[in-house]
Length: 451
Image (cartoon, rainbow, N blue to C red; front, top):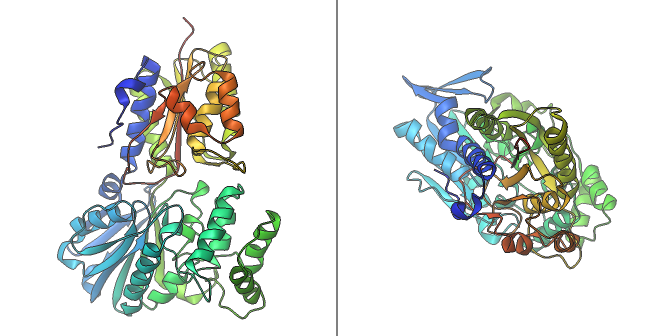
């Protein structure tokens, strides 16, 4: 169960209550325990896996395999591994996952790591994951648990790149406003595990990847930087990202990438690599999973739900203005949907940080920008990161309405990317703690009829 620590203080109206109910429903629906229960079964020695849409089913005869290993990483990897322990029982040999939210596994080792900036703990965890992959043989099954946050939690610096170099590059990419696919294009080419390289290490074993997606469009090569997925990006693409954002990176990084462009370092696993014939990837849940659960709750509460998009991206503060404009149109004209209504969206917005930035995250910035721009008293806006950690804060996100934050104060905070203090003063911060999942952002806009 997901608990909002300060919920009593946040429920200032029925609209606030509905928004929070929708958020909680979305977070709970995206938890690995719920998702595995709906997509994975083990009967008479056969593991059956369905994708999130329910239109594809793959079976694995467990009696065929000498060993069944679990490997992987991400915010929800521990919880996913624990549910697999329950489902597989004695068929499971062991394994290692790296996570920042341990679930209390008994057979699979949970190794600590850090997110969003990689750490030495993560490096050691990635080394342990690769050791297990190296042990797998032709008659083994490797279940790769890959969830949001896996890019940072599974750092495996390649060549002469150090962890400090990797941390520096990651920080620069996060601060410059680069998209997740741009960030991962660089990280994949600085890594010994990303870009399909985990699958390469596990070959010739059968690899079944179980994915909880935190990426817009569920691009398998981008989720956790695609440890078992084919990758069409190149060293040249990674160098282009650094050039596009004019990033100054450690010499070891630029030298390694340039050497790779010259063909001196192995590329990531290309889409036509023969080893992929023994690899299957199953997307068990995504941001859409959370949105659909939230939509159902809105409908049950008597509101007409409308999904705007599960692929929202771009600057958080600018995206907020678009969302608010649609909500105000609903309140005033009934288009595109008449109130009482709930507008929902998912995806992942970004924040280009000011040089002397303060505290916050994309979801807090989205809500703060919404509160500043709102001119309608009939709209309440809520937004959270589904892993319970928005940016580098202890907040999941926020919930607010027009007037909750004085406009001048809010605009100053936005200019400094300092949303957290402004929203704290307004008692608008949503705190859940780690949620056990990560399927990107979830946004709820409740539109009440005019009184």
